[in-house]
Image (tube, rainbow, N blue to C red; front, side, top):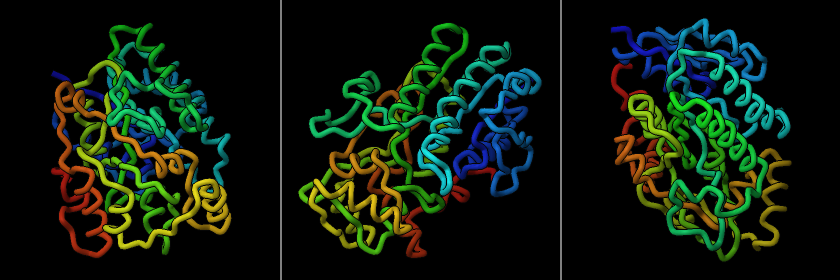
Length: 331
């Protein structure tokens, strides 16, 4: 019986590379292709690299030619690279997704799509529920550009799923990731000499360890389910406790001035604090992961506090757990 054939978009990112690496050593997978506009940072054996811009219009011919039955959409810009304008990030997120959806529509072999999306769709609000369940994505307005991008991405795949009932579309809503190998807004923020925080706020934060971010995506490939699925480590951690574990002093900033101060820091070359992260640092956010564990069948290895602890220990050259490359078998 032939194995499955998988395409991973955004394969040059760290998590994209790790997803492709794991798929390539899975005996049930016959073929893995990785698509991006630049090569992966490390060598990928048994993965065909396709150099292409997701916005470029070539997907319509690439997907049928590769004969893939599963698409993992990982090419979503959460934090624009230096030199990438917000408009360019929007084009990758929305125009790129539109191109991918159109290509899947024209490819008769595609049977499952897994999107590594974002829990940012819920926003961060002062009166939010203790835990967001998947049906609460439109409880509040989409306030930021990234939220609106994620909303459009979900709408495009939702419309595709309604038109193509034989294709299973899984929308994974990941909380922000942290881990020894990642360079993200969260890790950059926690690495500042003094961390600006809005005075009078100590929100509950929920994160996902890099290992679990990869493993949850692979679990959804094995057991795809229809609709949205929250992805996060169990539990939460308060911002004050997080900074204490990171060994970083807080720099309290009056809340009305917080956006101005963090924007000034960006102009000085310090960590970027996006509008989404600013709201998260005020109000926090937690999601319910019942569907992930009960329907997808995946239980995260790291709770949120454990994920933070692993990152802290890795920075100090002592580990509670190994990095992704050591945790994941077959590499």
